[in-house]
Amino acid sequence: MLRILGFVPIFVPIFVLTAAGIILSGAAVTQVAAQEGAKVSDASAFKEFGEKAGLIKIMDDFMLGLLKDTRTKSYFEGVDQKHVKEMLVDQFCEALQGPCVYKGAQMGAIHKEMGVNREAFNALVEQLQFAMDKNSVPFATQNKLLAVLAPMHRVIITK
Image 1: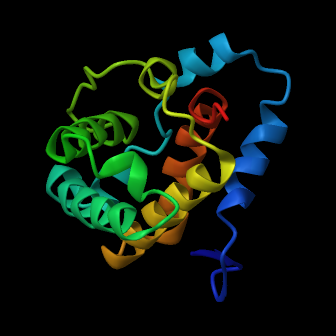
Image 2: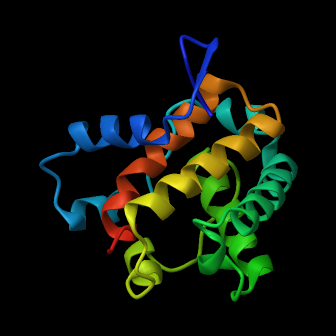
């Protein structure tokens, strides 16, 4: 749930993605792939996420949400959910300037054959926001991470 001015609840997961899309409108897919290693500029963000233990809790809640949401369920129910959560923890930890190193595949390679559409991607972002809210991640800090992750939509949405 995205809050405008910090107090009006509105479901607008596309807002962050659109803003990032405008900024990167001229970027090629190869440039997006290079951004996969991008990090938030604020070193305190990792602590505000609860460090690695907090990210693990967020990923547990995130996966539960993805499996309950009819728009995302089919992408996650038949996969090794433990592995997906571990990779996301490492990816987010690295992006938040934590001590982790993401050793997973590039986002384009992972999602190439999945047929992810915009509706499913937006639902995933929405579920991530719910999980971050549930775990009391400050709104501004959530946006720092989302801004780093948003450019990946260009290689994840394939349908």
